[in-house]
Length: 320
Image (cartoon, rainbow, N blue to C red; front, side, top):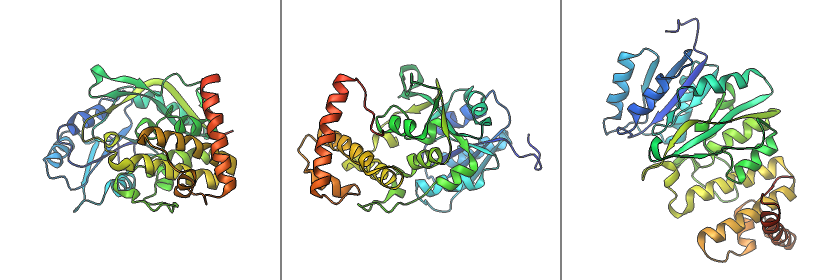
């Protein structure tokens, strides 16, 4: 147990709402860490299915678990913020309430952050309905250290996670870069599902440091089920949220050519997803553009280049 004058080194943050079937396994995976200097902060977002009672029971039997409850549901992103505000550790590990940690997660990730130049460390992940039938995502990347641009390229091509659930970072950076809303060309209610605020934590933190660390061992388990965030993409709201914040981030931090490279890639992906033609100008205006003739020519030219790169080089580098 940590004395009041000696706060824990790491805070494992578990925001939760109505996860009675998964929360006990989630909290237990946090408590089973081989690294010992941590706390578990659980913030219940006014659950009404028995989740809160399960969380209370853990806090009664293990003093490392601190539990809090909102008087009403404040939405997922604001609940994430509440978790960070309650954290006492210098480092934070977000653990979503239907996911789990591998026992060595903290002991393997934390040493990477001893270097102040490292923004965050992320790892490969097991993804599936259970650990037994899970597959490994985000494995076999090229280097244990990546520049912010290399990291962004991997995120854009789904080779690195958009979720902070596979990341360990400094609590100060998490609090600084966790935002509820963004002023994108197409207004969106980002606070309703977190698609956008989650990945912007990673992008903004990476952009403020020299590099990102990577571990190719899967140290987290992302559970897929019918009510999981990753499955909730009604009307493509999750996809659109990510595309909007990626576009905004590019326009603010990279060249217009890099933004057009990404827009051409997302244009191709959108047409594949929706199985229909999308007008170039419509796509540009939706994601931070004006739909000018120059932009449309660039969009279509880069789209052709992406197709060639994919089949000739076997990879896509959007940011160059």
